[in-house]
Image 1 (tube, rainbow, N blue to C red):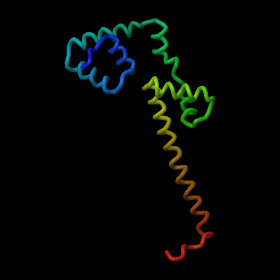
Image 2: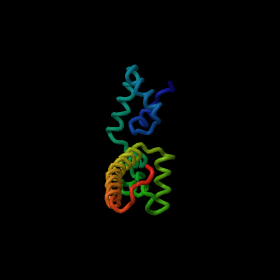
Image 3: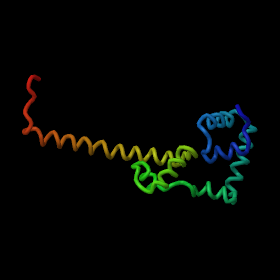
Amino acid sequence: MPEITRETLRDYLNDALPDAEIAAIERALRDSPDVRKLFDSVRQEADRGEHSVGAVWRRERLSCPTRDQLGGYLLGAGDPELIDYIGFHLKTIGCAYCQANLDDLERVQAEAVEPAAKTRRRRIVDSAAGVLPKGKGK
Protein backbone atom coordinates (compact mmCIF):
# COMPACT_ATOMS: atom_id res chain seq x y z
CA MET A 1 0.00 0.00 0.00
CA PRO A 2 1.41 3.44 -0.90
CA GLU A 3 2.04 5.92 1.87
CA ILE A 4 -1.08 7.79 2.94
CA THR A 5 -0.32 11.49 3.20
CA ARG A 6 -2.35 14.55 4.09
CA GLU A 7 -2.66 15.34 0.37
CA THR A 8 -3.90 11.83 -0.39
CA LEU A 9 -6.52 12.14 2.33
CA ARG A 10 -7.59 15.57 1.00
CA ASP A 11 -8.01 13.99 -2.43
CA TYR A 12 -10.01 11.18 -0.80
CA LEU A 13 -12.34 13.73 0.81
CA ASN A 14 -12.79 15.45 -2.56
CA ASP A 15 -13.51 12.19 -4.47
CA ALA A 16 -10.44 12.82 -6.59
CA LEU A 17 -8.84 9.37 -6.44
CA PRO A 18 -9.18 6.23 -8.53
CA ASP A 19 -11.30 3.42 -7.08
CA ALA A 20 -8.28 1.28 -6.15
CA GLU A 21 -6.75 4.08 -4.06
CA ILE A 22 -10.09 4.83 -2.41
CA ALA A 23 -10.38 1.18 -1.40
CA ALA A 24 -6.82 1.19 -0.01
CA ILE A 25 -7.50 4.32 2.04
CA GLU A 26 -10.74 2.90 3.41
CA ARG A 27 -8.91 -0.28 4.47
CA ALA A 28 -6.22 1.81 6.15
CA LEU A 29 -8.86 3.88 7.93
CA ARG A 30 -10.43 0.71 9.31
CA ASP A 31 -7.12 -0.88 10.30
CA SER A 32 -4.86 1.96 11.45
CA PRO A 33 -5.45 4.32 14.36
CA ASP A 34 -2.64 6.55 13.05
CA VAL A 35 -4.33 6.95 9.67
CA ARG A 36 -7.66 7.68 11.38
CA LYS A 37 -5.97 10.35 13.52
CA LEU A 38 -4.39 11.94 10.43
CA PHE A 39 -7.73 11.75 8.60
CA ASP A 40 -9.54 13.48 11.49
CA SER A 41 -6.95 16.25 11.36
CA VAL A 42 -7.35 16.69 7.59
CA ARG A 43 -11.13 16.67 7.90
CA GLN A 44 -11.03 19.33 10.63
CA GLU A 45 -8.84 21.51 8.42
CA ALA A 46 -11.32 21.10 5.59
CA ASP A 47 -14.23 21.93 7.91
CA ARG A 48 -12.51 25.11 9.07
CA GLY A 49 -12.49 26.14 5.47
CA GLU A 50 -9.41 26.63 3.41
CA HIS A 51 -9.82 29.88 1.53
CA SER A 52 -7.25 29.61 -1.21
CA VAL A 53 -8.43 30.17 -4.77
CA GLY A 54 -7.86 26.48 -5.55
CA ALA A 55 -9.85 25.31 -2.51
CA VAL A 56 -12.79 27.58 -3.29
CA TRP A 57 -12.64 26.52 -6.96
CA ARG A 58 -12.82 22.81 -6.02
CA ARG A 59 -15.38 23.24 -3.25
CA GLU A 60 -17.78 25.30 -5.38
CA ARG A 61 -17.16 23.11 -8.47
CA LEU A 62 -16.57 26.19 -10.60
CA SER A 63 -15.15 24.16 -13.49
CA CYS A 64 -18.04 21.67 -13.52
CA PRO A 65 -20.64 22.03 -16.27
CA THR A 66 -24.28 22.48 -15.31
CA ARG A 67 -26.76 19.64 -15.60
CA ASP A 68 -28.26 21.31 -18.67
CA GLN A 69 -24.81 21.47 -20.27
CA LEU A 70 -24.24 17.79 -19.46
CA GLY A 71 -27.58 17.03 -21.10
CA GLY A 72 -26.43 18.88 -24.22
CA TYR A 73 -23.20 16.90 -24.16
CA LEU A 74 -25.17 13.67 -23.93
CA LEU A 75 -27.19 14.67 -26.99
CA GLY A 76 -24.14 16.05 -28.81
CA ALA A 77 -25.87 19.43 -29.04
CA GLY A 78 -24.50 22.83 -28.25
CA ASP A 79 -21.35 24.84 -28.72
CA PRO A 80 -18.61 22.53 -30.03
CA GLU A 81 -16.01 24.14 -27.74
CA LEU A 82 -18.22 23.50 -24.71
CA ILE A 83 -18.83 19.90 -25.83
CA ASP A 84 -15.04 19.45 -26.15
CA TYR A 85 -14.48 20.94 -22.68
CA ILE A 86 -17.10 18.68 -21.10
CA GLY A 87 -15.47 15.64 -22.73
CA PHE A 88 -12.11 16.78 -21.33
CA HIS A 89 -13.65 17.39 -17.90
CA LEU A 90 -15.22 13.93 -17.82
CA LYS A 91 -12.54 11.82 -19.49
CA THR A 92 -9.24 13.53 -18.71
CA ILE A 93 -9.98 15.22 -15.39
CA GLY A 94 -12.26 12.36 -14.40
CA CYS A 95 -14.68 14.42 -12.33
CA ALA A 96 -16.65 11.81 -10.37
CA TYR A 97 -19.37 14.34 -9.52
CA CYS A 98 -20.07 15.16 -13.17
CA GLN A 99 -19.76 11.53 -14.24
CA ALA A 100 -22.42 10.57 -11.69
CA ASN A 101 -24.61 13.41 -12.97
CA LEU A 102 -24.12 12.23 -16.57
CA ASP A 103 -24.88 8.62 -15.59
CA ASP A 104 -28.13 9.82 -14.02
CA LEU A 105 -29.05 11.77 -17.16
CA GLU A 106 -28.35 8.68 -19.30
CA ARG A 107 -30.59 6.58 -17.05
CA VAL A 108 -33.40 9.15 -17.21
CA GLN A 109 -33.05 9.36 -20.99
CA ALA A 110 -33.14 5.57 -21.36
CA GLU A 111 -36.27 5.37 -19.19
CA ALA A 112 -37.96 8.06 -21.27
CA VAL A 113 -36.98 6.59 -24.65
CA GLU A 114 -37.87 2.95 -23.98
CA PRO A 115 -41.62 3.43 -23.35
CA ALA A 116 -41.83 5.89 -26.26
CA ALA A 117 -40.17 3.37 -28.58
CA LYS A 118 -42.56 0.63 -27.48
CA THR A 119 -45.56 2.91 -27.98
CA ARG A 120 -44.31 3.91 -31.44
CA ARG A 121 -43.78 0.26 -32.47
CA ARG A 122 -47.26 -0.70 -31.23
CA ARG A 123 -48.82 2.21 -33.13
CA ILE A 124 -47.04 1.18 -36.36
CA VAL A 125 -48.11 -2.46 -35.98
CA ASP A 126 -51.69 -1.47 -35.18
CA SER A 127 -51.91 0.91 -38.14
CA ALA A 128 -50.60 -1.72 -40.56
CA ALA A 129 -52.65 -4.63 -39.21
CA GLY A 130 -55.41 -4.58 -41.83
CA VAL A 131 -53.32 -3.12 -44.63
CA LEU A 132 -50.40 -5.48 -45.06
CA PRO A 133 -51.03 -8.90 -46.57
CA LYS A 134 -50.63 -11.86 -44.31
CA GLY A 135 -47.34 -13.66 -44.77
CA LYS A 136 -47.44 -16.34 -47.44
CA GLY A 137 -45.66 -19.59 -46.83
CA LYS A 138 -45.22 -18.98 -43.17
